[in-house]
Length: 338
Image 1 (spheres, rainbow, N blue to C red):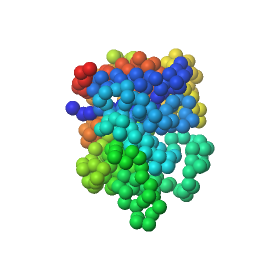
Image 2 (cartoon, rainbow, N blue to C red; image 1 turned 30 degrees about the horizontal axis):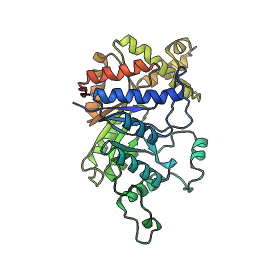
Image 3 (spheres, one colour; image 1 turned 30 degrees about the vertical axis):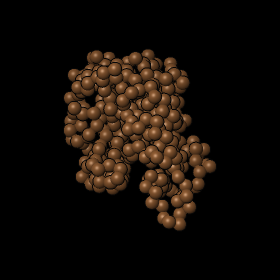
Image 4 (cartoon, one colour; image 1 turned 90 degrees about the horizontal axis):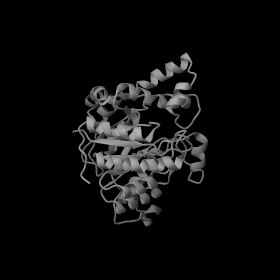
């Protein structure tokens, strides 16, 4: 049985304000815990009107406290936005409070536009170019304590010092991320739902070139996909209309809350719009349980994914919960006793 997990963006809609979207995330996580999902990861995005989650570490603590067994983590912390010591201390605290249930997923992107990224970082030390690798190395050093003997950080301790960092995962949508995750020996989660790079190639490379490390003795590859499941194909096709319009608006530079199905149906689409939507649909898995599983399995089998992680930005919260419940049942995930 393939482990099944959730990637949650705390979706904001035209009918759901951000504060309610955060409460919906806790509600959905409790469902996922009961349904037998393995992980529940929270994203970090800034300045996006459709995403209410800029601080995954805060949401991780809230969700871990409201659930009993599911692993809760970041999908991910955008490391260039944060001082590595801050990340280490916050996630060591979470691990101390919820031992064995926390994941630290790390991303290279800012999770926002350039101006917002600057506002997030303008009090951090300026580092030219892509400094993700440098920050990742520093984060690992806070755990290993292998700073050079004369390094000033030798006198600094990441607290709580009796608690290890939780398992580290690298997130990515390219061959670079797959190569780095394999080289440093960490878990790897591939974002098929927005990647232009081939998921099978990325996960195959990761597995073939994995180096065992103190972080993980063997590779573990998560395939993250976008899916919408409903009792019938027609119902699923209707639910996805909201996501179609939201993605189209984003490509046009309009970062808006997710519209309702009615709003999506009333939108005056051009032929060019419909072509963009058709292209974006290639990244979505849509349908009834009987339809969606045969569509998912070829990608799962070709990539040899160890775990499937699903994101589902459905407008209606009840329909979103139902989508995850139907998918768990279709994939044979067993509910956990309460």
